[in-house]
Length: 245
Ligand SMILES: [Zn+2]
Image 1 (cartoon, helix red, strand yellow):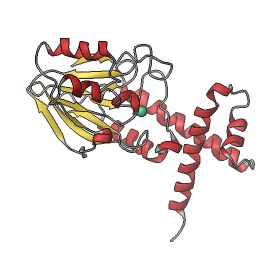
Image 2 (image 1 turned 135 degrees about the vertical axis):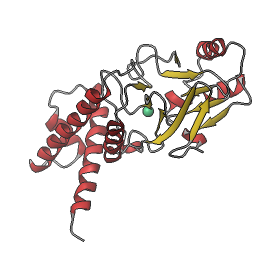
Image 3 (image 1 turned 90 degrees about the vertical axis):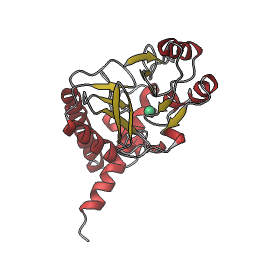
Image 4 (image 1 turned 30 degrees about the horizontal axis):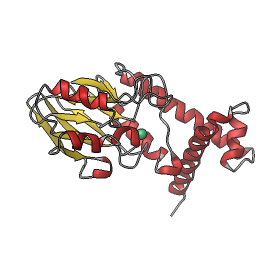
């Protein structure tokens, strides 16, 4: 496996931008496309050492993972693309070359089309935007994110007890259980805060954000609002499910 940064640095994507992972061989497989930065495409070509890129697997359709597809198709016209807007990806789909065998794992929550790819030999998991070292994952509730599904996906990955998570942002996670436990605890704590805000009579996302984070900068307000909205949706779904029939 060769980690090739997509060279789209930002506050959200990290100092070298998204991670893409090249699995050389026949077929050669690239996990996530990046954004089509010419130096990234050149780095892929160099790592392939004259052979073609055969298959791109997208963890999901967000721009920073998928916008590079046209640049890859322009360079390698026969490349196949699965996942994201290209679709054609199903839970359990297998992909292999002489070096690796991957199994697609449907893990919605951060995005409705989110997949992880499990290396069935090492049991490492290419986890896309399910987790990242040293930070949390946003659940864009107004754009298809679903916190209840996200927590189910975290628990699914935790139960598989992978030795490593290979995320789309940040460094490789060598202690997945710790990170996943932290994520689950963080969300449980936030849910308690949102429920407390509701009990105190605050009902709109903006009121709840103001109550939970009284000194929040305006730059972070939109992200906090999405997070609160994701919790409100989950709380409503949970309450509907627990109502007697
Ligand atoms: Zn994403």
